[in-house]
Image (cartoon, rainbow, N blue to C red; front, side, top):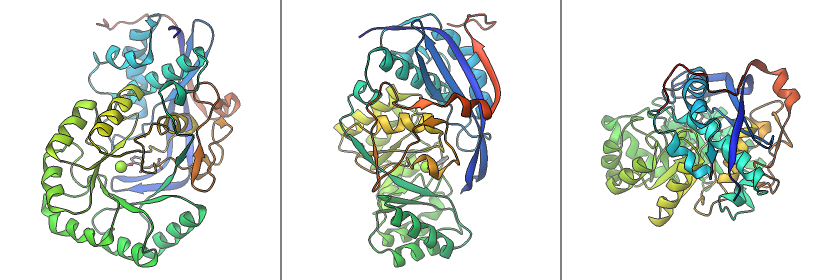
Length: 380
Ligand code: OSB
Ligand code: MG
């Protein structure tokens, strides 16, 4: 395969307004800044990635602005003008920076995109993804009442989504799940707690076993895999980890402790597509199914998610709803669309969607062009 060399990187910071505010156990989001990373190689091809951060450090420690800073000061200077033989190598080039995984993934995914284009392949093809269409689920934020949640679920079931995920938190759980289950006795249903519980709640969480959930996602602390192993032994419902898994090593330890039976893979959270693929493979070898999590991405991050989900162990529908569920207008053409609960894996080069530069301009807050390695931080 042809290697690439990065000649220039443009950081486009944009502001995106969500169609409807999204509420989780850590708050409500109605708009977000996104830093789009455009990597330009020596032949003039562009590859795109995005920071899947929010504006506040509530899901993890990063924000859009910390990610942009780390990209500009440390990550971009490290890869600039280097010959990159394969994007799977980029993760290790970036480990000199501790954590900041979302920042790393924004750059690394842009490199995957440009590398695929350079080598005349779609991203899915480059990573060995065989699925031609992916199954899609819908993640629903916390609603004001169980009745409102039931209505939302009804709408999405009607629309064809193959899995319904409901956000829960203390006070917004048993009666909400009860209402959904009694109205829809057999839909594929799961709950995501975003770390809202502790081991003091074991009896309460065990009560949820009666709802026949596909899984409960991240019930306990964001940095825990020990208590989750204790809880999994008590609960019949499979535990799925999200926040706790940042790397292949975390996944290996969680599997060996029995902390979960399913893993949600988010490219941003684990620092890139390379690490995501390694976690996918490890889970496959161990009979652990995976699915693609969502971070309210623009079309760019969504396109990377769709390509990754073409890998064969993504056997559970992901949080990869179509563009129209998040934005009045997305920033890619065509937008990501769903038909009968499926999204077609694009066959065009790289991510397979064009970035609509006019739409990026309209939403632009700031743009920075980086082409030299003028940096006051010594890069190891
Ligand atoms: O925990 O999966 C999560 C959104 C932001 C931060 C964390 C999460 C989520 C979602 C949204 O559940 C999924 C989506 O993009 O639709
Ligand atoms: Mg989650």
